[in-house]
Length: 236
Ligand SMILES: Nc1ncnc2c1ncn2[C@@H]1O[C@H](COP(=O)(O)OP(=O)(O)OP(=O)(O)O)[C@@H](O)[C@H]1O
Ligand SMILES: [Mg+2]
Image 1: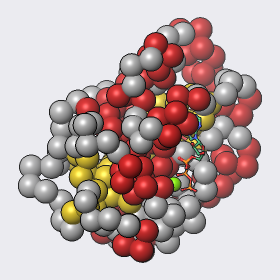
Image 2: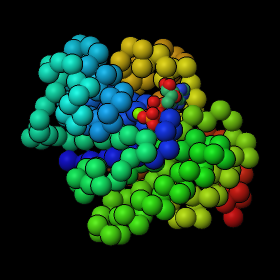
Image 3: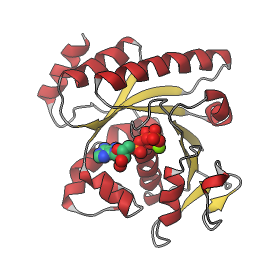
């Protein structure tokens, strides 16, 4: 079983979008998948509540009981033979409150929007997280994924540089896309949508999934070797 905690103290960075799409990806790929919502806002819980029973099953774990209106999809414990547990966490998270999830985590995925405000807040958060992990001797691997990318401008390269200097791996880059809004409306993931416009967005997930499953992440800019050269020189 692998546990992936999607985490960033900064609000609106894409945690719930990434958690639900990752859960959809693994469930749709045939893995026994659990989605644990630790956020009192209940975005992932609401998504799972509305998910069609015709789609690949995702088990929900009750982590914020107040926002759960039905018991249909909820478990109290992780089912035997679970392959993947995806944990969605709240903005402004008190790390002590998710200590249990962090202790069991194999990987921590931190979505960061490439903007100066988000880069600053997220790097402060990562410093806090690294201190916390040292105190509690928690050792999951951490990576940042670039979230809601609209263009690869100066902030995108600043993000690569800032987190590269902190020694944090960049596991992938998820573009801003209307398909994520559409997937949320349908309580599904882009991986389960067949429209041709989703195909490009699905490619964004390959390096993130490779990092999660333990394979070496492929190039962040695999489709554009010129971009790759630029991003490498930005990191130099
Ligand atoms: N790649 C994307 N493309 C388009 N819209 C996105 C993308 N990622 C997230 N969004 C939208 O951005 C908003 C914030 O995303 P989301 O709720 O996933 O962030 P969050 O980090 O979970 O927020 P919070 O900290 O409040 O829990 C939502 O409206 C979501 O639909
Ligand atoms: Mg959220």
